[in-house]
Image (cartoon, rainbow, N blue to C red; front, top):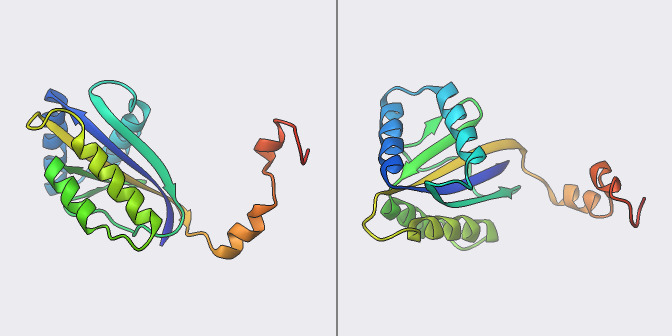
Length: 158
């Protein structure tokens, strides 16, 4: 397992069709640098239309190490472009044993519900691995530490 950043976004309208076509092309002819460029661009423009939903979070422990197929791999990102129905179907398979499963399922359902039913939209999911999973010992060790970047703000522990 890995520590990873998850991004879930919904694009609507004509852009949704363009992105679906882009991913369909990558399914048969992967272009890792372009997958990474697209993923960075989506994250950079996640608060602009035609992005109508954008969510991002860290998962340090659990949520698996792959996206549903078809997905495409960049050098840094793994990405999937899903219909709203496919996003909900994946959410239904996430399980409920751990909080991280519920987080992903919730974001997928939120992304699928955005915008009018029947409207052109796609749900994009990005996975970016940042390192190995954290252990309970890592958490215990970090519990009482204040990182340098936070010390710059003063207060207790400075």
